[in-house]
Image (cartoon, rainbow, N blue to C red; front, side, top):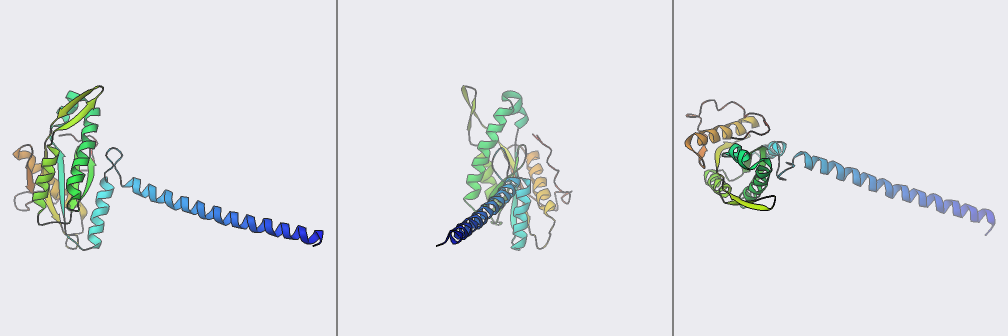
Length: 225
């Protein structure tokens, strides 16, 4: 083979190698970009503290139910007395309690195919496909919150017991597409349960619970009650 032919062969090989490298690099870059987009979308629907879905994730779950034309039950759970707990033990203790409570709620809800979301400081929401037994599930979720919980503060461990109230409402997306009403009605029922006392649940009743068409209040940050 002549010198010219050898040079030509080397140049061709280098060109082919560069093309393959560029192609593979492009694929890796595109793959990383798609992975980054997926991670960002996932993070946008997650609560930083508990790892549960957040308010955006909750509405995404209701949108998915609307696409299936499937009625769901919405349960709003609000912890009792968290302001007192913060005053006694501090915000760090409340954060620990919220993380552990999130785990308890997720365990109970997942057993029946439900999903849990953190809506605000001390409030959670659950979306369930099982509409018929939603009040029973709400009671089990409230009971899970009331289990004694160990918190670690500096070198000390302290056991605390808190209660919660829950409100239940059924959302039928193909009859009423306004998701705010689903949350607002469950929130209204939860507030009615609060008036009865700690650890209670209530089911939304359009006859007795006036103001049911008001959307739930937006996330107010601490929101402890």
